[in-house]
Image (cartoon, rainbow, N blue to C red; front, side, top):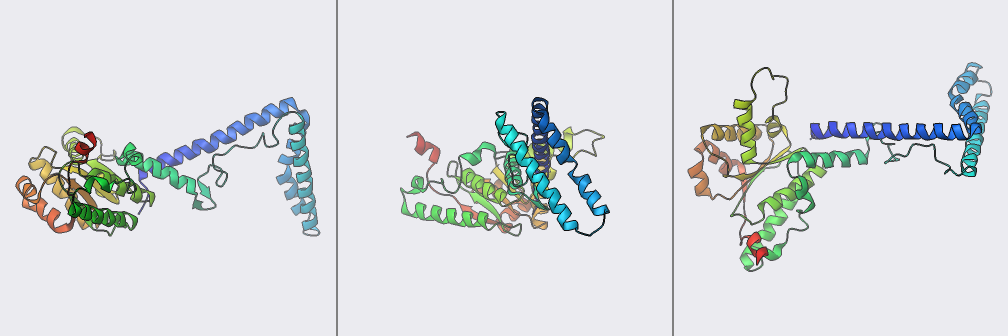
Length: 324
């Protein structure tokens, strides 16, 4: 398990800029106050020499060192109180010259001691979602708003979809890279994309790297790598690397892509590589078992039928129900 590399680097840059901006703004306010209140400049000069004063005390030996250090501390506290009083007297907040961090716990560094701060994790999650392919879908589609009323016309359909919801919720909440791969099957408009988005959101929030993309776009990236990249680009990260390396790959709309020898070969190579590396994949398709066999070579369908757990979606097109 590891953060999405791109999202992690983006977040590091965001926090670097946040911390720098907070400290620069504080420095500008400090200059403003010192220009307006010379006495505060004098206090700041004394306070800034504290480190040197401690070094001098230490150099003078250990005798009464604790008392001498405590005396310095008390003097500093007195000066800080005096500075705060002067700021208030002149119409400024007492903490006017202190950096205004978004997160006081880590002071916008992203770290509390040697551990990543919770705020850094949340920002990585946001960037991972942005990079994963699900984008704004996560704001509209989750397990909690997967509405079973659209399956309630038939008791058997409702029962099957309740089971699917619980199975896939448990899959997401208990996700590890040792989980099985899944193929969601069923006609269009039955909630496969909604469920996939819900899974992706939960798994990303657990700290895993998830890539969600249509098979059509995945194949376009493979075509670019094979025919469009050109020469002298060995140093560039391949557009297809993320599909092989992510903790969970969600491939939406299998069967809508142009199918030929090249795309079938790429599809087989991708699925087989992830299976061999014990990395789970979720595939969504509107095709039936027979349609999959007719469309793809045996080596692809054998992987889909033999290595993926099938989840059958049933019912009536939700989009059409909403239009009525």
